[in-house]
Image 1 (cartoon, helix red, strand yellow):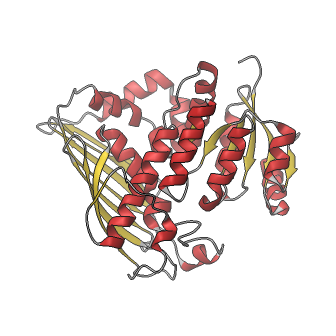
Image 2 (image 1 turned 90 degrees about the vertical axis):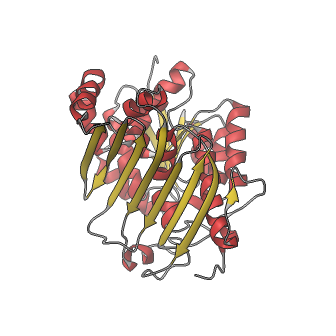
Image 3 (image 1 turned 30 degrees about the vertical axis):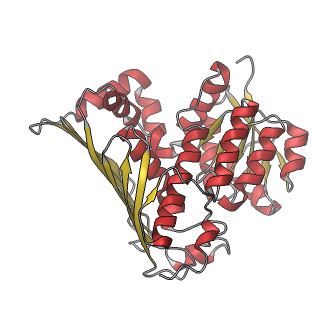
Length: 367
């Protein structure tokens, strides 16, 4: 690239801080040109805290896109607004970094995916777990068949939030704009598990509960997915867990090895063992450092958005698909809608869904 790609961030909440840190770490490749938020003071505070200069502030995303014509639009607004803003940005010449979930229905996510294909736009989804160190190396080796057949996998995401978190914004925990523990906190974990296991879901069976939080959607959800390759995957997502100890753990069991990895209270956990119990952690750690360097490995572990932006910039310059692309965004939403539909109808459902299903179809669900 002869000059840095310009970036506009739409939505100046918590996650936007991580976006700015990533952009700053990629100085020379990316440059932040604008911040946009309907609450102007939120954008002004974010800009002041960043210490950056030469960044314009907007309250209307259409004005921002029209004036700046950014190479990349980062969409970090509440999930219920993703479809409208993402579609508008692509139709006006911008590639996207789109936070999860892609949209709040399988129809809208399919339309975003199809629009990206029609207009040849790149979409990098905010599925952060794909960009953590070592994850891609493990996925490649599983895909090559080095460890034999994939047998089963499991994830749990215990990302506790108290009532203050949900009360901080009216849209949090609603079926229309946010969804519950599975849709908001667990969707990128489901994406990672399916990606590691190397096969698409073909059936979902689930149950939802509301145990502690006074929200419209679930604060606890569990599901079993059957994959096209015959493997099974179990899913647990909870926000009714301890808010002081966020944890997300993944296990993939193959014929010749077991991979367990994740985060527990901000600390990385890794246990890779071949058949017979031989530990393979060092092999992957050394491979990661040799290929990507120690500095980048540490930075991307602390802020996976660095990996997303770096990969998106490379995808634009080389005209290739991002690691977590538009299809990944659609597929993960379709799987989540299947999980919700299974709970609502109290039966297993076939994936991908044949009919449209939206999170708002869960309104009035009897927990």
